Image (cartoon, rainbow, N blue to C red; front, side, top):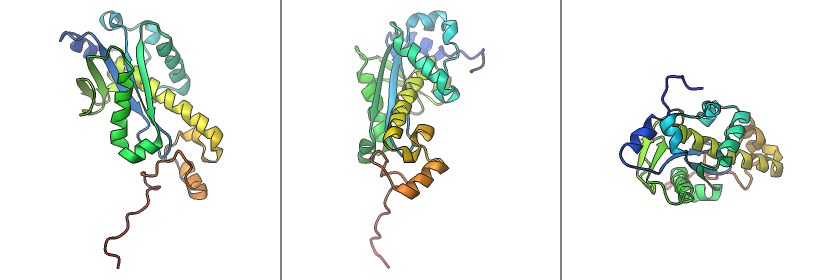
Length: 219
């Protein structure tokens, strides 16, 4: 949980002070795994929360990596079930990742999530560095999912949506252990790859799955 003194609506209030009225937090999940989709979410929290403070039972909302699986699921239900919260969740599969590269696929899925918000936000707080192709003006925040409640909410939605798909993938390809590692390159996952080879959701453009380039001038 973040320190009590940390103002996690600081960037939201600063943005509203410029005259903007629709502000979304944006984050992604799943850039690093060897298998499965990359996900992103965009979330607009109630402005009253920004101005008057987070409800007490929401104060523990944080970067999804800092929450237990149970807490992530709890917050996912709270966020998606709240009548005053707007959100969009998008995923692109491994075929798109291989076709575009992971950076471009991540930027695409962020825009896909933003497109679900209507009317479109005027501005976005984005976790990480500048996304040049983002549909709306942005404020990039390194480690933003621990600095902004809006980004933290997007972090939770993206992470849970992706994890649920990987748990379903485990039912189709149980030999890889997707339910445990969610596609990340753990020793167990690498051992399963060495034994079974890739399955349809593995990212063929990622090492160690990527085929070596042929030598132009073989010896």
